[in-house]
Image (cartoon, rainbow, N blue to C red; front, side, top):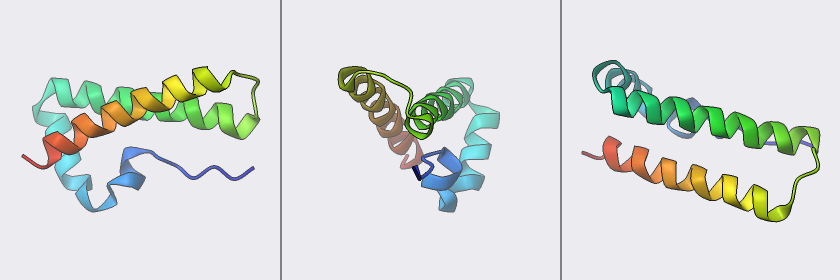
Length: 78
C-alpha cells in the first residue's frame, strides 16, 4: 500500500532553509522537528507494513503528529 510521506522536508519543502536555520539556532525547535519526523516514521512504518494496531492507537499517534505540526507551523510563521 502506498503511503505518502509526511516528513518535514516533504510537508514544508518551501521552508527547508528556515527549518534548518531554526534547528541550528533553537534547541527546542530542533527537538520538536526531530520528534515530529520520528513519529511520522513510526506512523508510516505501521501503515506501510500493515502492522496490527488498534484504530485508537493510530488515531492517538496521528493526533500527536498534528499537534506537533501545529507547533512547527506556529514557529515558522513568527
